[in-house]
Amino acid sequence: MDRLIEAIEAKQNPSVVGLDPTEALVPPQVVASFADEVRGEVESDEEAPAAQLAVAFYEFNRAVIDAVADIVPAVKPQIAMYEALGTSGVDVYTMTCEYAREQGLYVLGDIKRGDIGSTAAAYAHHLSGVGEYDPWHEDAVTVNPYLGTDGITPFVDAAAAADKDIFALVRTSNPSSSEIQELELADGGKVYEHVADLVERWGESTRGKRGYSRVGAVVGATHPEEGRALRERMPHTFFLVPGYGAQGGTAADVAGMFDQDGSGAIVNSSRGIIGAWKKTGSYGEAMSADEALDLVAESARAAAIDMRDSLRVAVYR
Amino acid sequence: MDRLIEAIEAKQNPSVVGLDPTEALVPPQVVASFADEVRGEVESDEEAPAAQLAVAFYEFNRAVIDAVADIVPAVKPQIAMYEALGTSGVDVYTMTCEYAREQGLYVLGDIKRGDIGSTAAAYAHHLSGVGEYDPWHEDAVTVNPYLGTDGITPFVDAAAAADKDIFALVRTSNPSSSEIQELELADGGKVYEHVADLVERWGESTRGKRGYSRVGAVVGATHPEEGRALRERMPHTFFLVPGYGAQGGTAADVAGMFDQDGSGAIVNSSRGIIGAWKKTGSYGEAMSADEALDLVAESARAAAIDMRDSLRVAVYR
Image (cartoon, rainbow over all chains, first blue to last red; front, side, top):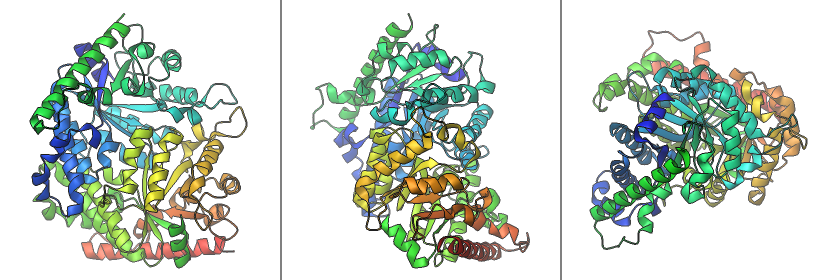
């Protein structure tokens, strides 16, 4: 986790921008501007809308990345948004990761993969690549712990070999997360606390010079008290904290998930940054695609600075 | 789930062939035969081995599909094996699904996706497609329940709208599955039993004419007693049973996961079918690629017939 921690320190900013584009978050003139380009490239007419949206996602992402690359240490593309469009979307996911890396950003692929051991070993190629070829361009990925240790070990090994990291789901930010994660156990504690202990153990042999292992934990901003307790419980586990902004988490909510030195966590905002243009009141349908992308970029930058400054006040006490 | 049940009945065979190719499972001369074709198509030399393996996976899968299409009702491509190769692998995953469907097979995409509600809605496009475009060609997908109801509902809605199905992980076949799934709860029962009850509930509004809902459960063949108990506990939930064959499960182990009518479950074998050629003793390095693929096909067909016949004896009592 040292690379991420150093990137955070260099920018004095423990936040990550979620690149989760949807059709509603991309200005329609940007999508429209790719109609001709796409028409000649797809195999069938029915494929065109998805391919067109995928290209628009890439342009949108590049505008956001260019606007925030000097402010934030990391981006977190959510692969679901790209998979929704099929293979042209998956292509754009990898292109987005590659572009972000070229701009010096740490790329956290939000893929939440998880399977039994032999299959997890295949997924771990997200981190280890194929020979010299790195098809996914990710510095870290999120993983799902429900299958237990043998589903996680291949990711840990791949991360250690490639100087990369993983983040396992512990306490997610969504309303239904309590249904399984908060179940009370007969031996005391809750399911997510048991998972937390597993995660701390999974990372044990991979602690870096900052004291944090290569196995981080996903802990939602919407659970501030639990997050504070988990910070104590998992002293060598770095936190990825989703749920800030649009999902309701505030800088005060996440403050307890950091350690005494203001390290130990990175907070994600997606819609709050990439959708900031919709709240400016400056958007107009008559804008050109370039004008609309400029607005996206300016407002994303302003929102990223706001978030950084709020976190600095709350965290770097 | 009616479409799957009817397909099983038509073939009198409750088994599904896992299409989980790895480099070790594809005869090397098949991979080598694509060297020239790939060299002209990739953007960089380092990408060539992954792209070559991806094309080989497709030829391998087609040989297996052609060999078993009149025997089995369904195939289950494991997307991890394809993601391991990057976007050329993902392309081959979708091409495999499309080809299998064209041969009349029900395609169960083993993707184990799961995320919070808004993101799960994006993943659910695996089932619903984009307008008229169906990029993934899947009839069902597997999902991970760790995030609770709001992470599953979008898949259920998409399945209902598209006449498709999902299978949620309940009790997986791997050795570490007990670490979280078997935890004892303070209110009685175990985590996987609680998940089982959620899964039965998630499917409630989507029961078909055979009494099974569109929300199936993954229950490993390596847990025969638990599987029998889950069959009682989840009367409207169809089971996908991995872990047969190479992982140690037998026809007798899975018999209890079927209902009184010999319905209610489908059993997966991957390596036992697609890797059967390695156990024949007939393979030789001097074989041509076509000869090697013929051996793959013949031995996969023989193994699929063996499995069908074993299951018929154990299940259709």
